[in-house]
Image (cartoon, rainbow, N blue to C red; front, side):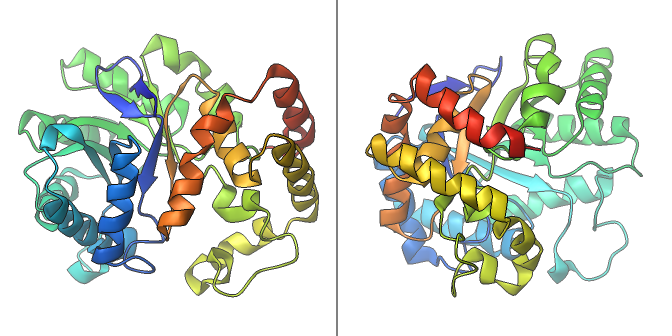
Length: 326
């Protein structure tokens, strides 16, 4: 496993990391989480991504229970969470849903820490932008989390470049803790935000990236070429919004051609797709997901596949996917 700095921050993250979206609580219980996190850690993974909203808070509880069982030194791993949507278990309080106001944020970090069983998280993200709360209010609340020792670094997820820059400039002007990381979707069919919109932020403010969905919710595994398999992510009722993307004929034809390139490299299509993400030097860590240890281990072998991605191979991949990328 290789490690990269989080933008211009001093924190180093494993090139590949393990996330809990969709899987924890829905497919993965504490026993399975312990097994998979141990396998990831043994392979050199040091970053484990989570969010308050995942499984209504149960994902944080499962990861926290697993961390307690594993007993790793706290300095050896990095844990993140994200805030925006709130928890249904908190009822219909007007100040806790789809917001980044100070009241919600300052109480949410305490709830996450209780569920994790930790005294701090390493990274905390604003999970989506909030057009109704002044950015300065959000920046001050996130900065205060760090000042209070409840988080070490903060950032954003799926924010526009303009809003990220605005947040950074507010923090700079008022001597507050600045956002250092963005967590955007990034894969072969979704690239313009990372490669174009954010381009000036990497050098101007030192922005780091922890990217999600390297397999386009499973599209880039090739398993959706013949439709939606039973038991797959695309078959889940709560993820029905993904089905149009997963069954896109042009993209599935491109995935089939990618499979031929992957086979030449002695790899799977999924490994090729994950490896491609790591070739972008602006990406600090690629967040992978898995519901089984064998699936996790296969994904982690993408680090080896990345070494085989020559300019010629990358050019062939580009020709297949760039015309279909958003």
